[in-house]
Image (tube, rainbow over all chains, first blue to last red; front, side, top):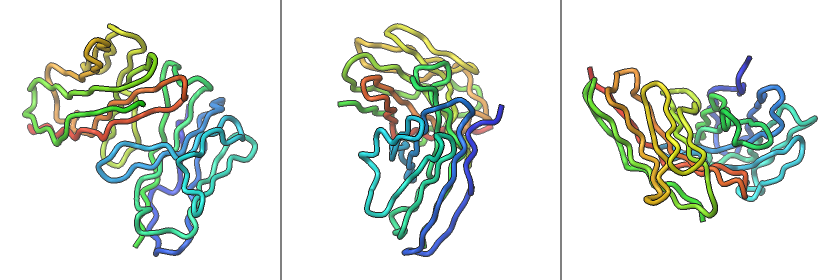
Length: 116
Length: 112
């Protein structure tokens, strides 16, 4: 079974440019999460989807970040315009509706964004 | 509120040494506790978990016991290997909020 797939793995952009990240969760996982991991820190939740509905986006900087999960499967996270402080690893994770499953969350490998 | 505190790294050990990485937590209700490992350039992988007090999670020689009285979930391994070099994250999930809270991570370096 394929895990959580993210692309691209690495992205370098100039500040003020837009950027998008893509995530394909594990088949059957209806809950999808986007986390941001700053250097030397633990991941912090940006947004959580239950199927196609964003049920927790309280930590998403809505002035420049947006996300969508069409048809409740794949998801895209966008930043427009990017700022230097957005440099981080963006992690996607998925789980069954209740994360207290056997495997908790399953994380993708992440997208490492560098804004110059 | 909910939070996780880990010992700061890096932790540097020689191969076959004993490992302890301390983790304490603050939570409302009855959280489940996890250890995740992140190898260089990769995402987080679940290492072990415990869902109630006094449970012991174990995997690949690593162990951690859910201690409610001390609100701790320390990670231990009796004999580390060079391949264990990674960053280790302690985390809790509070099902009232359906959200993970991660510690800041502890980097482990194991030397041959």
